[in-house]
Amino acid sequence: MKTLYKILSFIVMLMLPFILIMTAVRIMLSPVFVDVEYRLPGFPPDTYGFTMADRLKWAHISVDYLINNQGISFLGDQKLDANTPLYNERELSHMADVKNLIQTMSSAWIAAIISCIAIYIWAWRSHWLNYIWSGLSWGGWLTLGLIGAALVAVALNFDALFTDFHHLFFQGDSWLFYYSDTLIRLFPLRFWSDAFIFTGFMTAIGAVIFILVGRKMAKNLSWFRPLRH
Image (cartoon, rainbow, N blue to C red; front, side):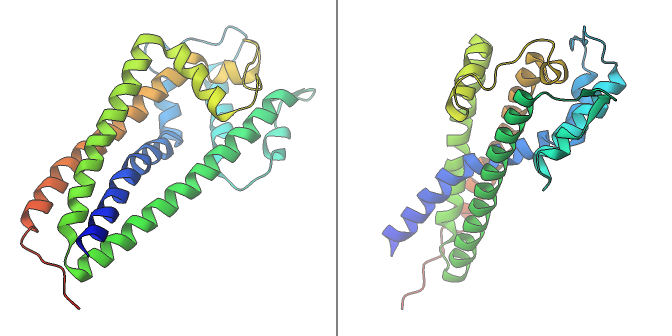
């Protein structure tokens, strides 16, 4: 049975980085992040006329669309004025793609959390929690390694990282827009650079917690032995 316990511990280790990253992403998709981001020193103003209030209003609506259960008409029906839609067709198509990606990742995130909880409960009932806590601790180290590599890439060349990210998840040049388009006016490159850093920082905090707690719990529970049947 020890082999099975080690395999499940390894699976938990692999799932933890994804769970932590997606947790940080979900926090980033809250209204608070937008509110704070727009008020940071040096955040570029909109040269095409959006005020701070305009940006906050339309950004909150846009982020809400990404996590709600509404169709693309939720954004398509939004108007800057009587004759000007908030987003053009190209922007709406990209927002629909982004929503599909976020919802797919969110479903996988929930499934991963449920799987880890189920494994944890089984381990608790069978007295091999030390394997799970060890896996969580190593998962924290794996997470720090991934986040460290990503943050180095952000520091060296965020533009290249941003481009590679979009090439990985979106087809062709569907994610490229004019500076005058609403998406760029609401979410300039600075927004996404800060979003990457925020996600990495929050994920790193979670990783450190699991490293410390996981190591301590694995050590404290090392005297447990799995039940023999």
